[in-house]
Image 1 (cartoon, rainbow, N blue to C red):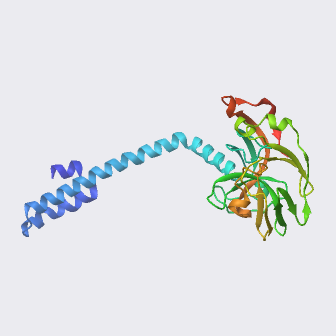
Image 2: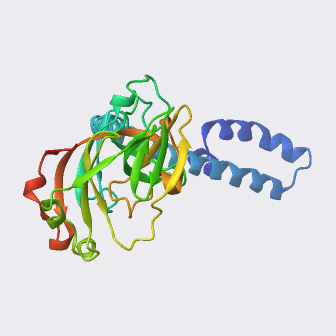
Image 3: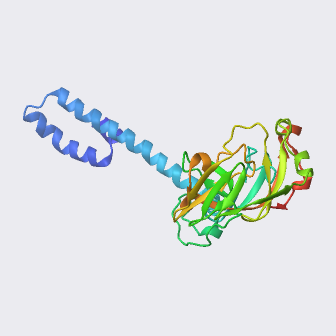
Length: 280
């Protein structure tokens, strides 16, 4: 009884104290008695541990609930409204370089439920020429690509020449200064910068002579709700030639600005010329 009073929870103690003597008189063994006592003591120990845990949790909640609310709101904002992404690859050279950090406008294509692909509003439709951040339909990897064909378009590549709805793109020499900012391993492949226009928004692209990337593709009719995307670095990009057409729900947002840029070839020294640079 002394053990029960000090260690067992109240409801177990009251039940046992009332029944122990009667049960013993009816022939219960002492082993049964001690089994009941030990179970009651164990229940009391667990209740004390849980009670202390609840008290500590309540104390933490009182002390840090403001911080928790701020973090939750910030994560929700980044998931559904605007975010920034770090670019580790050169698939969008020369427009975007390795080490660029991009500002992504996520609500422009419709406001989404945070942390999901479920849209609450529809927003604008991605347009030809938009630089978009998307979840790869192949494996969910976050990618940055340019939209070159929208639903209803017929798109093809003919020996590196982009053709949309029967209109072939025109190519002129690109800005040679773009090549100077490329990483050394890319410059070693003797890249060619060209200005592409006529089949969408005018922008510079990069070709790598001797690459094994497919230079001819399609024609392909883009179905409803799907988009065809390419990297500006045509010979080094995992785009719709490899991952297939991209569903609209997988397009996370539009990249609008290079917030900052760190040069991997120079120990991540900031590239001051790319600070707050708008994207074409």
